[in-house]
Each structure stands twice: as C-alpha cells, then as structure tokens.
Length: 261
Image (tube, rainbow, N blue to C red; front, side):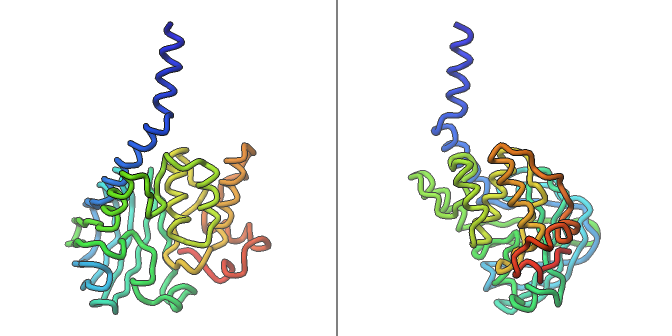
C-alpha cells in the first residue's frame, strides 16, 4: 500500500496539471521586479516603457538580492546608462546568480554596440514595456518595476497560451531544445532559463544583449545542452571568455565578431 501511495504522489508531482500550476506561479512572479543591493556609484533611472525613460549614472553592484525574472536570487551586477526617451544607452552585466542567467553586454565600440546603439534594440533585464525605477546612491541600490507584458503572459497562460514562450515546466525538453537553437534571441534565453530552473545547470550559457549576435561561447553552451538532453556526457564546462577560443573553428560567422565582456 505504501508503495502505491508513493507512486501516486510521484505521478501527481510530475502531472501536466502540476506543471501548469508551477508555470502560472512563475508567470505571476515575473510581473514584479523588486530588488536591492550593496553597490558603489550614483545612478538614477525612471521608465514607463523603453521609449519613455530618463536616466544618468552607473554603479558596480557587490551584491544584489530580490525577486528578478520570477525567482528569488542573489547576484552581482554592473550598470551604466544615460539618455532620455528613445535616445537612451544602457549597458548591464550580471553574474554569480544561483538561478538567474548571466547577462553579457558588448563593450562600447564592440560589434553589437555599433549596430544597436540604443536601449530599444538591446535584450537586457528590462522589458520593452516595463514601468519602474532604479536608484543607486553611494553604497545602496534599489530597483522596483512592473511588467505589463508578463501580466498579459500570465492571463493568457491561464488559458494555456504561452505568448512569451517562457514556460518552464509545461514544455517538453525537446521543445526547449528546439527553442534554445532558434533564431529569436529572447526565446533562446527563455529556453536557457527554463532548462536552468529545471536542471540547475547552464553550461556557460549567458544572455547576450545584442540579439543579432550569437557569440561562440553561447553556441558551445547550446551544444552542451543538446548532449545533456540526449543522454550523452557533456564536454567539460568552460568559462565564456575561454569558450570563444575553443569553438573558433565551429562557431558561426556572426559569432566570430562578438566578444563577451
């Protein structure tokens, strides 16, 4: 009898309905972005979509904590921004997250920056329609924002329509693998996030803020994920900065011009 109860409990945990509930919960928590950190610098930004924002300054975050991209985490980040309205430049790096993907931004003047100079064209940790503010004064930083796009995704998700293609538990690993290899950079990063939350690995995958580029280290991470999902032994993990050398012969031409920070 106990064995039957255990089997029944396991079936309920991995049932499609349970995956649905988990994904709706993640959709809901993605609506709010609330975090604070210990940072060095002066910076202020207020935004009502990426086309309507104003900001100035920068900081180096020693430790940030809060609700980000639907999960509670602790991470490090650096940010520099300047501009008003659509004429806004924004550079962000994120690393050391336990559940969040790293974010890499091409340095000023590198490929990706010249082709997509303004924040409107970048894939950062701020959504196109986000409303909120970020402030850092000397050693304390605060960020608070709401995402209308994530709210729409939550509402449509109740009817099983994943409009942002960012569900974590409902898609099969095969579907996530296909999304991870696709051309849409936002969907690729959402798939990498889903795989990390499900398996606790990222294989060196980091979100790149120039969406028209696929760096060599990102290509290598996708290859590792394929090997892992197909039941093979993945190659040894390599830091992003080293991966570009390891995959120089196999990387796509577009990746050769992109260099991570």
